[in-house]
Length: 125
Image (cartoon, rainbow, N blue to C red; front, side, top):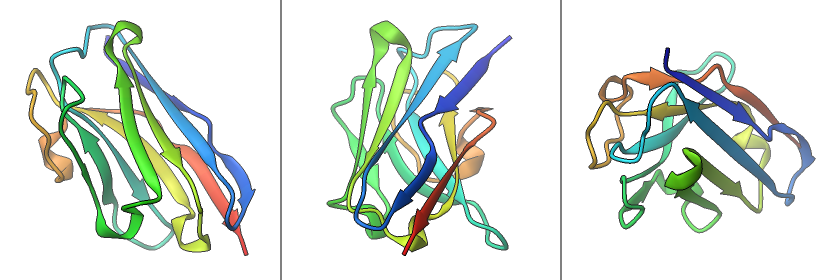
């Protein structure tokens, strides 16, 4: 059974930092692109960042460019999201996602076959 488990969320003041982790189990994701999405209350889920299987290609939504960094460690089946200079508008549930044996990145939810349960990130003013 495929499982993605996120951790690292929490409450932080504006300007602070958090590092999210997503550990994949049940299969290897070394040849799959992975991504982070988020969903704030009352809003649709939105793309945050994605990384190719090798880590050589990344993509970010405009609102997080220069503040967030996505990375991965294939030996540990883990993808990370380093979030700096956090803003109240970053408050959301953050979800990890993985493509099924597809190495290049995508920024649409339907392109990802596997999803974690989410981790809450709350940024206070």
